[in-house]
Image 1 (tube, rainbow, N blue to C red):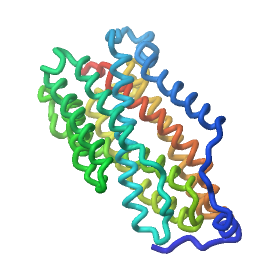
Image 2: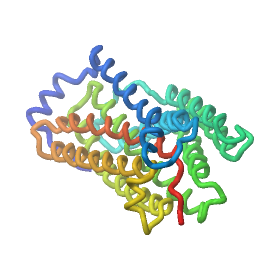
Image 3: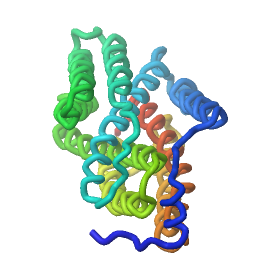
Image 4: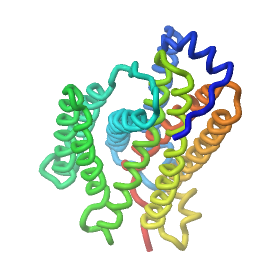
Length: 322
């Protein structure tokens, strides 16, 4: 793969380096963003259902929060593996990798999955409860793998999490449940690689290293992310058409809680796509290719909201058909 040619700006950055130090202001901003993201699943069910005639279940806000935490943990762990694989294709990629968040994410994922199983109908004795228990065990195994000398082994338990989540979302009573599960596997995998990958690329670039190689890593991620975006879009569209009546899909987008959240998620994803395009333009044309990190940071915040929206969707009733 051809690297981006170094400019005077990149040479200057390479000489000075990027320390990746964070001040208290950024820590406070991060905590504020996390708190705001938590409001989406906590308040989302009642807000989305307002005026629709639908009633949110008593524990829908907690289910949405737990699913959001589960998805976020999955993104962090998958993203670290993804960026580690990308870095091996970039000569001179930053060797000073950031501290792994995978063990902490595994703890969050384990707690979220186990708690979600308790909230499932009939608890852990139900199909949903058993799948939640399998997810919790898979997160625990992934966390242990992250602590070993071969953290790449996390890929297998994380794949089990994705598969269990796909089976949970499409019970056997659903029409063509296997097709729905297959779409969810692809959708969830592409989403985790996209969001988690960007997070870990930005964390990697904050470390001291060669700016030229850093720009090449960001460029390689951007090319793969375009394919991931296509996968997310195609599977999301197919899944939505399966779950919403095709003859009244436009009406359902504004008259049902599920449709409203889905519409909001689509609009945010469109905004994320524009931010990604802006970042890619900066990467190619700016004197300093790492100037693309600015729109990319906004993009990762927007992707965090998308993850919260995804968790919220799992707690809302599907639109009635027929």
